[in-house]
Amino acid sequence: MQVAAKDGRTNPGFEDVDLGTGSSSFDHTQNGPLGNTNPGNQTEPTEVSNSDDNSSNGAAVAGTAEKSPRGAVIVRLDRSISLPHLVAILFAVSGGLSIFISPGPILQYSGSVGLSLIVWFSGGIVNLLSALCYTELGIRFPEAGGSYSYVLQTFGSMAGFVTLWGYIILLVCPAWALLAYVSAVYIVQPFFSGCALPLVGVRLLAGAIFLLCAVLNCINVKYISKIQIWFSGAKATAIVLIIVGGIYEMALGNTENFSQPFEGSSTKPGEIALAMLSSYFAYGGWQVIVNMMEESKHPERDLPRSVYISFTLIITLYCLTNMAYFSILSHTEITSTDAVGVLFISRLYSPLTTVISVLVAISSAGSLVAVVMGHSRLLFAAGRVGHMPSFVGMVHQKYRTPSPSIIILSFLTLVMLFTGQALVLMEYISLFSALMSVELQIILLYLRWKRTNETPSFQVPVIIAVLLLLFHLAVLVLSVYQKPRQLGIALAIIVSGIPVYWLAVSWKQKPTSFTNFIDTLTRIVRCTLDVKKTE
Image 1 (cartoon, helix red, strand yellow):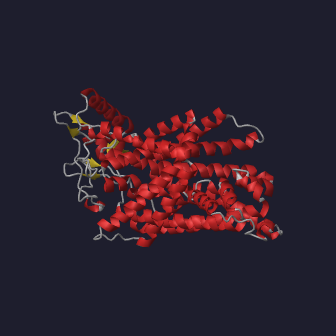
Image 2 (cartoon, one colour):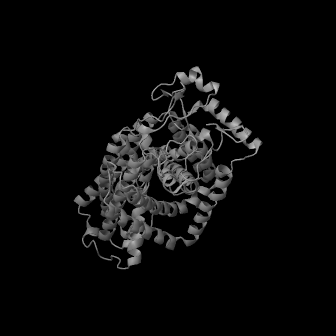
Image 3 (cartoon, helix red, strand yellow):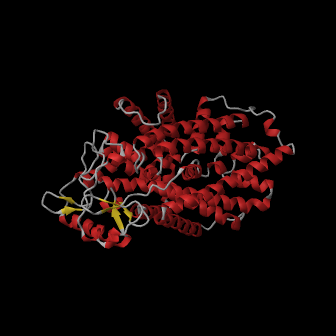
């Protein structure tokens, strides 16, 4: 998107953003202090009159392409995500692989079988209620960007940019690299039983897996949504395999761990709180779903239903899986390993160990595909409102995917993966998630207070929103208690986004050499990737 500078030049790079509302000259959310949330009333964008926009390539766009009043073709993200796809995505990303690796810390802090199962169930309910709060925000703002967009439209331009900055460095890229790495580890592990894994080989395989997932996300959202069902099926198959094995062992009489389920339960509030903290994060990852509301066919109807359906499945299956673990494994065995699922299968029937490893690897890849789809919409949304160069907010004319934003984030992820920084930064994921949870609960309550005249189709009771705010504040305090040094570093990284904002967004009179460089880069990206700006 080109913006006329004061000296008459056009600047296709970082747009002129209104510091009060976070809107740029082409932003469609300018009605009121929080923007117009009704996509049906959005104004048509001003089209760039470059020759390539009006060429036959643009005119040949199919699907959701429309014509603006000036006759130029408008390209939008495809509304291709239906209810089954939302459920599959939520099932894949909620908790990721936590059910296969996380029971240890929860059992260690809770102290007993019975209390650990209660903690797992409670953590699922808290995440369900939190997801319903996100659902209300997603229905209020049914557009790409999710949490970033909510902060931008509520607290303004700088707050939105700093949130985006933290998301990319502390959550998005480390999470992508970690999922690719875990998938590679589970693929390689059966071939190196009892031996150290080749680090370079694992990273190369992880890079290949990640690139495949990124390319798939660049090609077609409809295709990704369909194969996501198969990825989720792999995760469900692994879980059901463990549950069936547990039922079989219990039928044989292996119920010793359930004879006195609450024996050894912790009575220390601090340990119980840490168990709840571990359980809360064990279900995390579902937040990504609100980033894709612009591509949901019926967000107001399907988002609440998908949350209820997926969390009912997840909570039930996770609790049953933990019960299955206790049918074979002892307290010590569960707390001393970070691969509980594989250990359980090896004890149940060792020839199935390779099968469960492959299923877990596929599950990790499925989670990776889903988060790449969701997280890339953050950067894409930033490109549309002027927090990134305009080409970042463009989509492929044929496939309707935000390929520039995916490519940029993929490059950063590969750098983190091969330098080892992803494993360092993964310690900050829970801290940043806790910060964002508090911020979004405040946004929800603020909107309830300031926009009393609006009644979205779905609302959570205010008391639930208040209680969740208190809970997330407690989670944040516990996270700080566990990792005080990491919090300081995380805050320093987040605050470092402020000078970047001043230079990239607030500073209007940029040097001619810089604007010419961004102008050339934009033309190269548009021609090379066949992308076009959206509404």
